[in-house]
Image (cartoon, rainbow, N blue to C red):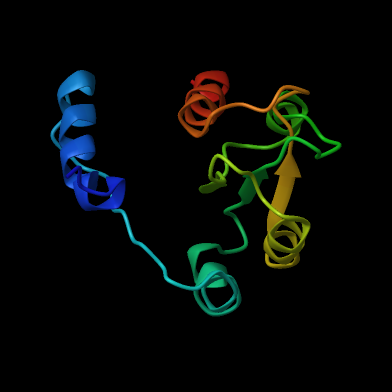
Length: 121
């Protein structure tokens, strides 16, 4: 029987480090409940100088437009394959996120990471 993907996260991180020829893994934290995390812990990730964006296909501002007037945000919020629900987008925006769109097509999660970082780099 195959392991659930989250049980294999270290394996995926190690593979990514090999591909990137890197040795410093990212810090990955899993949170069980969305609302308590956003309300209680998320604001501590930001300060007056740092920003956060949420990638959302129905946002009115494009990622490119955002980067034309802002520096790279400290936090990138990327949803699962099913996307964000309105409540989640609203809650994140209430706590410091700017909603940005990557275009009319809905992308796979791993593609969103590449697009966000590719435009910045």
